[in-house]
Amino acid sequence: MVKHDFAGSVVLITGAIGGIGKATASAFARGGASLVLVDLAEAEETECARLIGLGAEVAASLSCDISDEAAIAGLVDKVLEKFGRIDVIVNIAGAMIYRPVAEMSADDWNRMLAINLVGPALLTGAGLRHMRSGGSIVNIASIHARQTTAEVAGYAAAKAGICSVTRTAAIEGKAKGIRVNAVLPGAIDTPMLWNSPTIKSGAEKLDPSQVGRPEDIAEVVCFLASDSAAFITGEELMADGGRIASL
Image: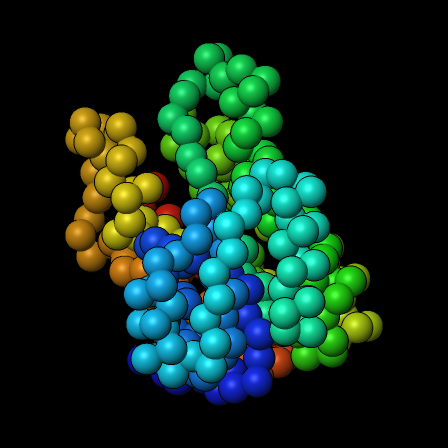
């Protein structure tokens, strides 16, 4: 693993408790960051202690429903009050439902868009308002933004949307010295993958060599957030082990 230097940086991560979020928090901790772990429920004290043991300067946990605009505003206020700054935002929190387009209700569409697009977009906007020059925002999208399968239209549409937001925010953030990029994971060893009905039924086949680890995505995120990627903005970096080529 490559260790990037995030000492003195305040890093806000949504969806930070499990899967890709937990691995990403660990990677930033090894770089000495001050971490703000955001999820629907607060992280256990033992998790914060684990991250400090890895090297995090601070590990604070805050609960937030990112589908709630007021909750997001309150979250940003709390972080600024406690730390005085935000240097990195990583939008990982997401949700997926499996339903044919013909059976999707307005509530289904609104839920997918609120969690996977609007919430991350609002936090991206907050980053553009409050970050100093050198700030970095990394949005976790999905290969479904480019090529998808049946029964995940809401998720795929939202992820395509956050890629578009990323491109526009990168343009708007350039004059402020704020970079905005997206990562498009493929099949990653998380509950979201294994809970897929098509995976469970065998209708969708997985080549084991194309199933990545959460740590694989965490490494990409840390690279994009680091000074090593200072000349990269508005990009969509696919990390899928070649899976999209076989879909």
